[in-house]
Length: 356
Ligand SMILES: [Zn+2]
Image (cartoon, rainbow, N blue to C red):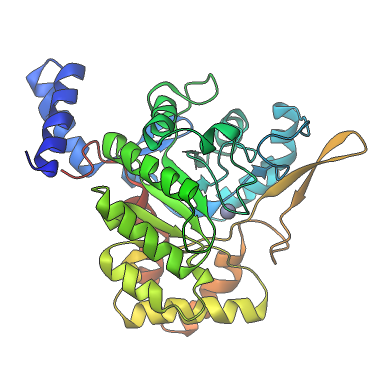
């Protein structure tokens, strides 16, 4: 049996199990084709995603995967502290923030849910592991388990919820360093492929350099996954942008996600975006800031400091600084809307039968 046919049949069998009523099956099948978005407050229609920042953080803990102690903090108090930034983001027109902090590097889904409810922003969290930065954020079992075993852990989060909650991931987030990919990184990518084929969750990978992105695409194709399912996170690490064009033409999403106020950096981003426009590939582009707060311990108490990434205030630079300069470059309002509304919805939408 062809792999494609097998996947379609297994998806359909899954639907029959869930919905014995034939009308319900038909309705679910049409919904499956369009897809949906999974937020920390549950499913939403892709049309409700609106203006989206596809790569941000709220709280990240950089202490490592298995430290002897972590900064402890109260979720309610922290939500009150950070809420003004999220309310300001909502007021500026942002509807959805995709929170890219994986497990073992500070992911806190209860805090995200509190902040989502209080700010009225959609917030999306993730499953998966981060092997970048010399693998210091990988738990011990990531080095000994097979792709199938790791996939089973992540699928459990998809099916039953994260950390004892009913909050489900809206995508898979991995991290890898420069090429060549290391064995543990390959194991994680293969695990992500398994999870994608069973759940439809898209795969966003923090990637060290362009050569590593190319390896990711080849590995996913070999695992039966379309390049359309891959979001190349930190594509700005490819300084001349030639690989953006090569991989976008294959279907990958190109995420330029470190946009900041520094003039020399802005020139780089403008050049990348202009090149994508020239190649007719703006429909594969995502832009974001990679803003957020690092939690540390200061004087026995948790402290939250904005990332030192060139932005003085989080979640603002694209709209206040980059957008006017893109208009001057000839990027139209409709193109900007496509990049910030349609593209994130297409990149992150979950189809029940991803290959169907
Ligand atoms: Zn990030």
